[in-house]
Image (cartoon, rainbow, N blue to C red; front, top):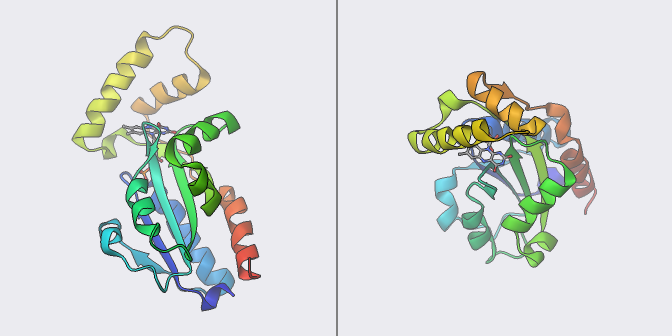
Length: 188
Ligand SMILES: Cc1cc2nc3c(=O)[nH]c(=O)nc-3n(C[C@H](O)[C@H](O)[C@H](O)COP(=O)(O)O)c2cc1C
């Protein structure tokens, strides 16, 4: 039963989209299973002791194809093979299967793929919430997109998002992850 498990939740969220999903997951755990998970700040990961932790749920935004903060998680969790890991990424892209395959391949080795349960949820984009470094990167990206002819629908969507923030966060998207939690509650 999940309520008897030690569950740790941790996310790195630069502009708040990943944090929205994490909050939904935290509430689901509490309301559906009566499981009170521990929230961990990403800064605590480096020295965290997961020896009593049954399940870690980690979320991070996609930045140039990499899942924010994942390297640190992978490094730390290696020493605690008994802890199950659910990993989710959020991004602006639609999450087509071929895109996601690229994302997982670029972020996880084959044996990590075997260990981690992975999910992708659509986040959003809000230029005003970016820090200086990311603003600069995105300005360069905007210029590149503007120069491209025959822009894909996703490219167009991205350009429009510079003018007006977009938010694709959707509670329903969590379905596959909550299904996994149901199975874990039954002893997976
Ligand atoms: C510099 C930069 C790079 C990004 N790179 C990607 C990317 O490679 N793929 C993607 O789908 N979204 C990308 N995004 C969009 C973010 O992943 C998306 O906004 C995400 O939901 C942010 O989550 P957070 O606010 O919790 O950090 C990028 C955004 C910025 C600012």
